[in-house]
Figure 1 (tube, one colour):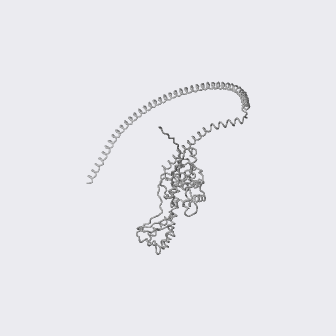
Figure 2 (cartoon, helix red, strand yellow):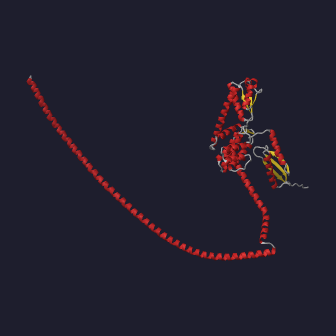
Figure 3 (cartoon, helix red, strand yellow):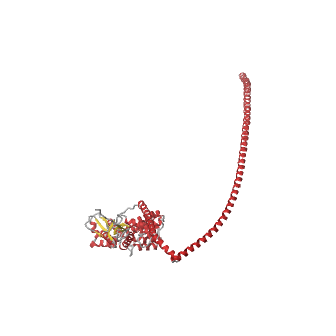
Length: 522
């Protein structure tokens, strides 16, 4: 058994050794094949590298040749260009030298000519002086002969001659003056109409007529008795505190608050509305609500004044003035609200000032403050012009503003473009149709007074007030009044109307003169 094992092991060992040698032999044969293949590939790569190197060398030679060729071409071109420039420079130098020689020759010739002319001029001056002396001697001799023959001195003859020339030329001078006056007037009217048309077309303000009463609505008529109170105690307290008339009549569910003072009427209306809502109507409560409403209104009018000044962009203004501006909302003139009128004047004045080349902000400021005195007339004595000027002077407003306050009622002359624009805007705002209303009796009285003033002048045949009293047509006797006198009469009538009649806006005086020649053919 052991022998068999040993025999098997020996056989396995021999087999392994034989297999190892056989495997080694096969591996050695494959290695030689791989080696031969690698050598062949290396030879191929080496050959390809040699070919690429040769091609690169040839390409390099070609590029070098092309570069040398381009360099030679550029060099030749640069040499040719430089040669051309040198030739051009030489030609310019030659031309300049020729020009210089020609100019020097010309200057030399001009110098010679000037010397010749100077000599001739000196000779002429001497000749002229001699002739002037001879002329003056002849004049003196002629004057001596004239004085001897006419029996007049030289000064007397000169005065007589000038007087005759002046007399003959007077008609021509008058005609020229009148023609230029008419042209200036027409041009001024055209320019003024253009400016007014621009202003009115670019600003169209609304108009609402102020009433003298406010209506307070009641939920039921029982509230009327509570407003009256026991023995009229409540209504007396209301009228005394509010400064208005409270009218309680048969009108259902309504009472009327009447007063010429719009500010008091507005406060009274608001106070009554709050009392009616509250339901506690008694003197103590009335006074409490009144104080509350008054404080609210004071704050409201200041805020409104500040807002208007800010919107107009006219600079900084004292709070007291802004408060008075806001208070103008509760002031009216001939039914026209004073604040609406003031804003309209400010806008129109600004537009017209822009057309005339003035200070737009200053014109708007003057327009806004021109009627500021109307906010004080209910509480202070004096007219609104003086009150307005005083308050504006107190707060150091511009001279233009003060001038506008006085000038828009004719108390001062217009001293600036801005002031003139404010006066024109004030007339436009007040005189436009529908802007203001007036009582029939005062209107008829004014129209009659205007016609009487016009008719009182000598030579007037008829006088008619037309266009709602804003124009008066005066027909004169042509045989008694000539053209120049008609102009003088129109001025006199206008001046007298200004002094005697109170009216808004302006009144046009139109004097008409005509002569008729009538004959009959028989």
